[in-house]
Amino acid sequence: MARILGYEAHMSYAFTYLPEKVSENDRFLITLAGPLDTFILGGIGWLLLANQKNVIRTEMLHWKQWIFVFLTFFWIRQPLNAFVSVIFYLITGNYSIENDEAKISLFCNFPVWFFSLVCSLISISFLSLIVLKFIPKQQSFSFIIAACFGGTIGYIVWIKILGGF
Image (cartoon, helix red, strand yellow):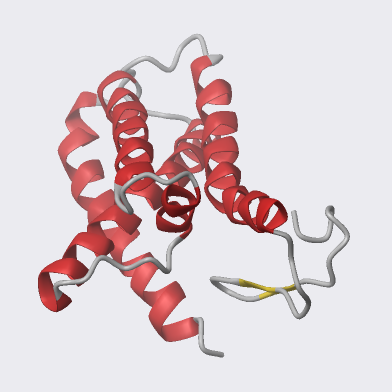
């Protein structure tokens, strides 16, 4: 988004670095692009999955359908960010304002947790529908456990371990 708006931006694993002054409205749009990107990717996965006529709770999903499920799980970003923020709050007593959702809430003069909560509820609703409607019944529980652990481990590996390189 920063480059679309004409800024010389440098992307990192978790941030967009802007070396020059950026207007408040452009900063808002650049920040909004992070959550919007994951919602769009998840939405594409959802649409592709929903258009599969024979996928509703079948015995087995085809590899292509699993790719669509994986795309929809980009939506797990929002609840994981909220979860990490709550853990940070419980440990430090302060709510982190470093994630995009918190910055968007503050820009709109909402409580710092507001946008994160709204995005998390939307994401959890869609992800629950995916698990209940598309994942084969015999795989639902193990899928949920794997998604929770995989999402958390992926977050830690990406942000805390590999991100610094």
